[in-house]
Image (cartoon, rainbow, N blue to C red; front, side, top):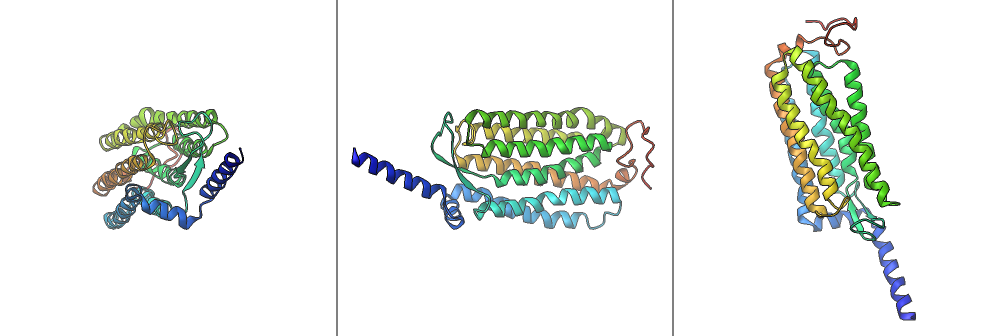
Length: 287
């Protein structure tokens, strides 16, 4: 009996030490997993190259609306390079004990909560750029941005909740409800705006790309260690990183390349406050 108690005490002490890992120890743990570490470093490199490329692509853009699209889009790799540096350094990673009912109940799972900060800051910039491209009115733009940020914040809550397995999935459900609002504006509202403003072809391409990639995030969350744990942490991280590469850098290149070549189309659009019928009374943008 005494040996069993001593063994349990040792296990608890070791468990507590593991959960309270210092940042250098987390950094070493990340570097020791080559697959996990590579999923961060590849994105740091691609984000850095994207920043340089996008600045070069926008060097001759003069129209204020086109410039705003460039600035919003440029923020995406800027946020990403900062976020992935936080992940690879161990600054925005923690080990959390999964609650009862989870597939890994009682185990310490590496949680990359810094990704949610990235999404909360970068995805609104993607949507802002898309809204400006489509010629969105202010109401739709405000609605989708608030829903998007709420989606990311509630997703973070799902990842960090360890008090109840059921509450983790309830947070996940709330996040998905906000995602449906984002999809509604992207798929129903903005295509009409883009058609009216002459940007439908490029908007529809980017819309399909965005929706297809963004659907992957909740799917991999559910399959990964934070969900039902079919996929391990490194594979899940690579899934997220792969989605980021397409949804951010490739998306941004396609958008900015089109805007740079069709600046006159952007310049002829009404200001953000004008709806499709032009009934809002806001003044049109200067030519």
